Every structure is written in structure tokens, then in C-alpha cells.
Image 1 (cartoon, rainbow, N blue to C red):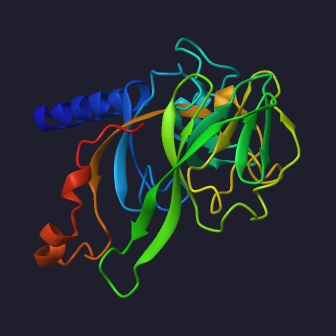
Image 2 (spheres, rainbow, N blue to C red):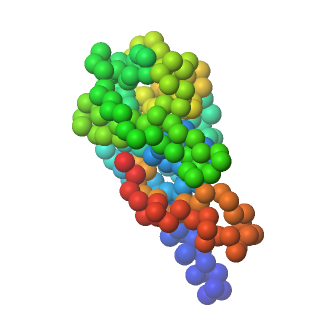
Length: 238
């Protein structure tokens, strides 16, 4: 009985932390390269934007809107439930706030009619030093509030999402984009992601706690030390 009480107590604490403080997530796709890589594991601060029904496991406590917390800031990396399928979690960068007009012209992001500053950086290198090495154009983007972050343009500035119509972000919604601009299904694709309602936000991505390059299977214990990306451990997410 004492053991059972201890287990129940421990589970309650874990559930409380996961619901109200931090929740772990992993990155299964490359849509946020170079900021986040496939195989990254991170903590999301759930208190950062307050709480909605999606803050609770399986949305067990249904209610509308959000309670407590602050509004997202432009440039935040945020986890949210996909508007077209709330069972799926997505992670992207907050680009547009309610009322903003967003457009991409020739690969250049425009916010409220003004081009966002974009500075060329050294290429981002995938599989460095191997026969499969691939160099991708990388830029530093500076958002209107001064937040700087890096993006990559694998297909140049003429890909199908590099020239878009003007998107006007509705009240109570946000416009999200991936840092891997040519390989990201995001708010530019209205029938798949579109504008993200505030209540779909889960929290702000804060810090990596683990990262693996995928070269070791779970049972290949002898390969684990060589698969860990040690330089990414405990890095903040910006």
C-alpha cells in the first residue's frame, strides 16, 4: 500500500509538471533547420503563454480560450496544435501577430509592407566531411522587434512558397513559419496549417536537453556515445 501511494504521488507530480510547467518534445522533421535538427529533444515552457484545453493531456479538460500567461512575441519558437488536426503537434517560429500583414516576395519576408533585413552568412553544411556533404545558403534575419535568427534557403528564392499573396493575420491568431523556408509546411499553406488560434499554443521552446544524429538505434548501446551531439546539449533555443 505504501509503495502504491508513493507511485501515485510521483505520477501526480510528474503530471503536474508536464501540464503546468515543462513538457518534453522531440524534433522528427527538418522544418526548423538550422535552429532545430532532427533528433533534438527539448523542453517547452507551458506557463509562458498560459493554459488552454490543449495544455492538458488528451485535452481532457475542454474549455475555450486561454487563462493566465503572456502573449507570444515575434520570433518565439513555439509548439502548437495543428489547426486542421489538433491531435498533431507542430513547432515553428512566431512571425506574424494579430492584425499583421505578412508576405514573402522573392524569398524576402515582408511584415506590414516592409522588407525584413536579411544578411548572408556562411553556408549551412549537412553531413560535413562526408561524400554526402551538402551546402545550403544561410541567412540571418532580423525581425522588426530586433530578434535575430537564422534561416536556410535550400531551393534559392524562387521556390513555390518564396512568392506569396498578402496574409492578414486575424485577431486572436498567429502566423507561423519554419526556419527551413523551402521545406516547411507552415502558415503560408492555408489549407494545411494556416493561421494558428491562440488557444492552440502549447508553449515556448526553451532549451535542448538531448540531441542524437540518428546513427544509433535504441538497442545499439555501444554506438550511443558517438551518436550524441554533445555541442548541442543544454543549448538555449533562439
